[in-house]
Length: 229
Image 1 (cartoon, rainbow, N blue to C red):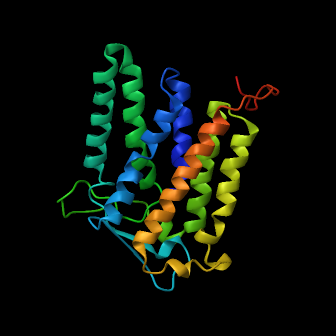
Image 2: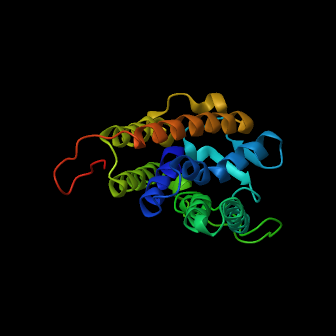
């Protein structure tokens, strides 16, 4: 799932847990991906990109049992929550839960769009999970995840700038998701490490922009439409 739509999940968590810091929630929703980038760079996990890459369907996350397995994600989520409790005591229980949910949300959302590449746990050589949308229906996958981002924005009652960012990122990703609108992604062919670093830049940029625009307060609009409070 695109970084912008993972980060948008922080908006729902902020709405549900107002005491949780938005910046911390944003970091939590992408914690799994930061781990994935690091493990790809040092060679523990591996991404293969076809030399004739035409769309995201040609990106194969062939080995990521530590960053994206269900068990590992759950462990990281619990550890993050416990760390918040340790620092803040019982009064931080709501924040701890929000952070833990943010961390675990990443792999759950990926299950809805990924090829079957998400393992149950490290060292478990069994069935891998994912709907396969990226592999077979990449454009519908992009539409689905963008709708998720818009839903998060709507529930948060965010600013129009924030909505514009989510929609813009969705439209801007069409060349990567559509074989028919290819703009030369083949330049990344075979370069899994380069791809991971590109994703890192995207995460940093979108996280910063969501944090900035989520704090933008505008005049309330008519009932039934988003408005900042």
